[in-house]
Image 1 (tube, one colour):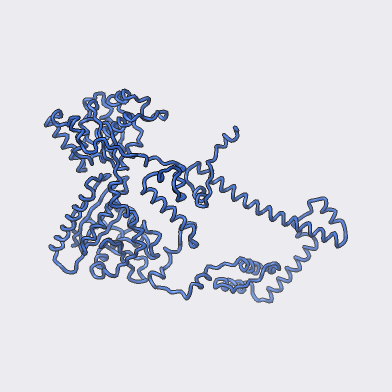
Image 2 (cartoon, rainbow, N blue to C red):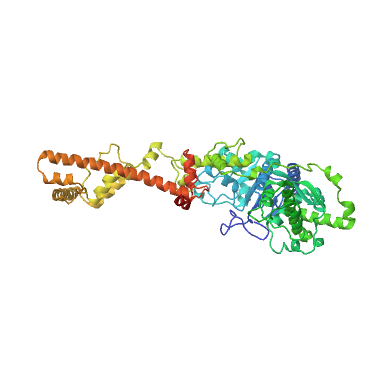
Length: 626
């Protein structure tokens, strides 16, 4: 809990489960757990950990662009316990969160006494990643403060006894366990592999997440971005989350009031993350009427942004359009940059102030100086933004795309998608799975394998517990209703299960003595015989002239012929029923596939897993016109 007494899930006296973090934020806490030792020594060790962490972060993320906030640590003291604490808002880029997890895991390998907690607004998200392989006792209601990173491993504080199945632990109690009994923590390679699955692509993912693109922007802005390349993140956020109030400076009638007037333009390469680039590229934005609209028209624009009939842009026009969006974002960002809480934004405000003091003519770079900049015209392929519907289906099937390329998107997206498909196939093949998910009873029953709190005599007993015999069930139902047993039913060959024995005993209790039951059965048999003789139980009335003739004639031969004819008709009806069932199944499946309207859905996914690929259905109206 913080200095104001607010308690987190798992703390003693916590009043309920509620979100303690803003959305899209990750929180991390670093503790140095040592036996004995003075408080001053513990603070020195924490400071050594903090310096090592920041140095490690600087090495890994030197060229990385954080979406909103970067990795940071500060020392806190609560309830006499000193530790390092940090919160990072990763916005729309979840890769920032996993980069922090990777950084913390690597840091834990360097300090044997370091224990780390990391969680977000969803709780223990590492356990969410490993939900498929978690033990049955580990539920979201009691997992707080149980998951720790130590020496590069994922460790879990186990339950002390069978009586504490639904009891969470406080942070103070968890620290006492780490100090007194660190060897008691559970380390599962299966849980760790699932929880750290996204970390396998690091550290290469840090560079792979960047994207360079050539844009045309004002010279003044090129100078700012060359000095502070990470300022592209807050500027993109300002553009992406713009509102009418923020757009007012761009709608000014005088271009001279703009911070970055567009007449003096240069073409340079800007470094984005893929998320930032996609946020800018995907936006439909009408250019400011006074400053940018004439420039875009002069560059050969046949139509402005927002027109669905616009032709594909030329290379120069695409660079100018992207530069217009970036410049608009910086105009909105720098309006009150000196008041911002973001450090990079405040640094941009200081650079702009220095330009006003020194004079732009002497401070801004010349064309020759810009040509000497590193990666001045680097243009990365942005085909990872294009997703083909057929290639997407091929990836769902686990096969390669139709083209010669490895598939849509980047390798990370393909690996994640194939993992989802493999887990779905495992779910379909899981005999214990239910309609709400796999292994429904895992969260409600004790884990006999992990906790060793309950033992079964044999696997056969478990199988018998869930066995079901349709013939025995039908026989018991007839007995409960007082009906005679079917003469055509086969006698059961296996012994009754434990549940069936109880059911039979209950039935015998309700019906009374066997003599009364036999008397009722004999009476029902007589009624049935009389009704059959009267023809009241005939379910197949004659429908053909030949049947009517047979009924009016006497003789055993005719009666035999009539019976054979009815047998043939019964067989035909049974065949028709089977056809109707198959037809209805196919009809419903096709209607479900059609209702997807070409999008992903359960019918399409199931057909794909069975190796069936259906073409897109045409509109009903088009079919009628044809």
